[in-house]
Length: 418
Ligand SMILES: *Cc1c(COP(=O)(O)O)cnc(C)c1O
Image 1 (cartoon, rainbow, N blue to C red):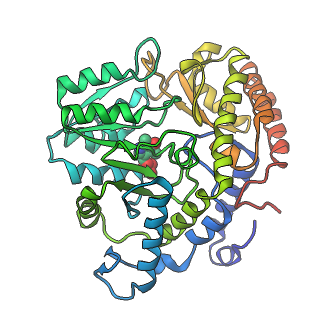
Image 2 (cartoon, rainbow, N blue to C red):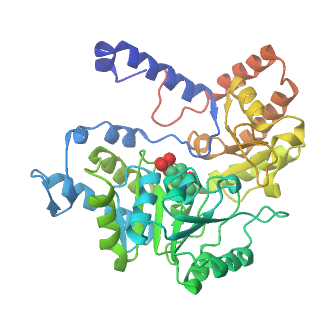
Image 3 (cartoon, helix red, strand yellow):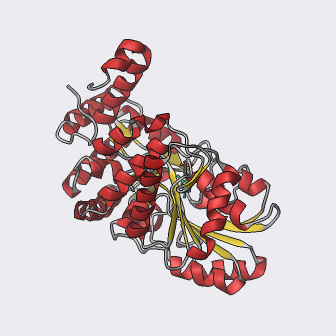
């Protein structure tokens, strides 16, 4: 633990929790696909004095004085976002991915309008119209899923549904889909039925920035993203759109949905966008995908059944029932083995969401700490052993000790354990 001496003095309780979490992030293999490690530079900007500031409004149009430097900062983040993704306009104020999406609904729809998004149990996000979400309650929602036999998006089925349902907004994007998404096809479907097209790239923004996944920017009216998943920025959200929608989107974020932007987050986002524009980030994104493929192969060769048989991106959806267990159980056992993932529904899951068939695993965080294909082979071996010792706590603890020892060779960015 380092550089938190003041916190230790003022509040040893919180300091101790953070210190123990830092150790956890060091000695576990973190496979939750939405998590990552940010750089020390991003951490420093996140923890900066910009948290002291208020700046309702936009650069040059603020409701508070003292914005000289914040205007400079927010404009820099916007320019960097537009350059990195080739977008006309960027709004860097959304507090996170969910409010970013809600701002798009507020910008483009009236309550009761119809949205068409991917169903949560098939890999979509809550904010794509799922029934417990405000997006499924204040709007009419129709949901597409993956094909029953291939477990992939079927664009003919999606087009047929769009023609039948005539939604005002079509959303593409997923939290648990291991394959490329054809944003061009979605764009053409949306145009055909006169719908807006929102591409939510929360999970894959870093892969797009790093040239590993086709970009939706040419085809989507609006692109939403989180900034903290594969993009490796601070917790936050971002919207990008065509110039024609810029004012509408901006007004929906502020004053429509939010108050003051989180300026410390804006600073850290600007840093992350700068990092993502470097050649090393392309290598990172490529390695995330290579690791995904290597881990998938290692798992398949050990008898695990993967949804769609593999992956094109950073995540793998595994059917745990294929090795005689279930998602919740396997995720708990793996956690005790020092390997952290989450239980997840699989498409057409016969089990309940709180006790689903699958687990979801991803390579962004382990790639940030320098693991490569050869390490994926070792990891696949541990996962297979975990299944063999599913009822043996002592054997699980032994694996966890091996994992912790192995992790010493891969110090994550931003973390120094003394
Ligand atoms: C993570 C995610 C979000 C929501 O982001 P939060 O920052 O958790 O609100 C939205 N859409 C997709 C596709 C996501 O994966």
